[in-house]
Image (tube, rainbow, N blue to C red; front, side):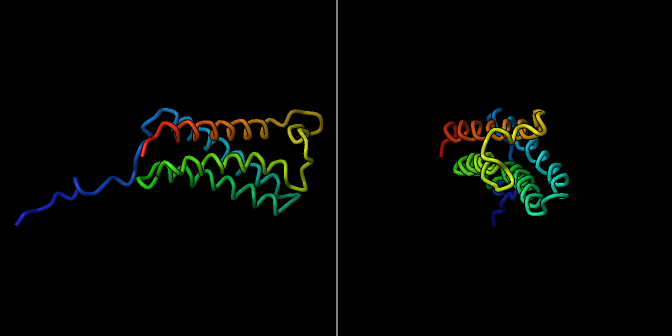
Length: 138
């Protein structure tokens, strides 16, 4: 009777990005996820609904990071990551609490650094995810 070496048959649950751009994308996701979780606690005072959306969005980025480091990550998920980040950018402008203008980047005449940072890294996620989608082969 032959025996099978389980370690050679089983694929590791955890994987690492093959391209350095993947690590950049993860850093961007950590930054925007943390910003959204931080802002959720600040927004809670005037809008529970908006605070909940901020928290869920932040958690969503961290769930995406975890998924990215598993063997279940597939090429098509880069498109989903790009769409998720793009939806987060667009969401800033479509809520009734926000005026549909660039004024969302200013608070009392002062540049809102959290909004600028979050939207910048989200744009970076879109670029990284699309780049990785075009570079990965299936």
